[in-house]
Image 1 (cartoon, helix red, strand yellow):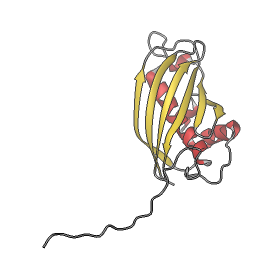
Image 2 (tube, rainbow, N blue to C red):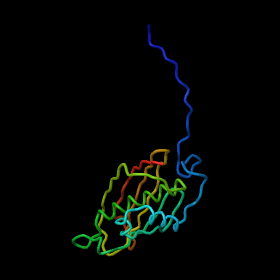
Image 3 (spheres, rainbow, N blue to C red):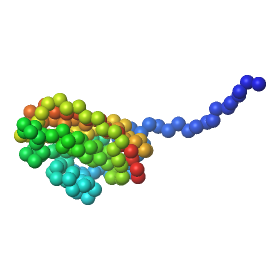
Image 4 (spheres, rainbow, N blue to C red):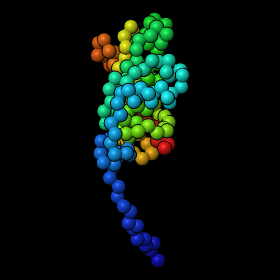
Length: 165
């Protein structure tokens, strides 16, 4: 006797898109840069706060943070360390995902990949994190890090986050 099966009717859910009606957020409450700065101060480890990141701007699907130049973050030769850039990209992701959701909630890094393209010396870095997909349990972002004095791309990263709450 051949194996017979009946398909089970499953409801089709629209994809969660940043800015869309099912974007995994409460009815849209725009987060301000001041609120995002407070989110940083209240939820991040002291060593991350030592980076002195500040939120420049926010949108429905992105955040722009500034990493101020500091000799303390420079490596031999005077270039900003890759570790500082990676930590800034990771932090910008939390702010961008929170802005896209309309609220901060517990989340954790699942994956981060960073490509370094040129050294930054003596200049602030602008970190722009854009949420490319926001689901109920996962978020994906693309991050660009540019030298604020030249506008040149210093590094790019992508992150995947698990949304825990």
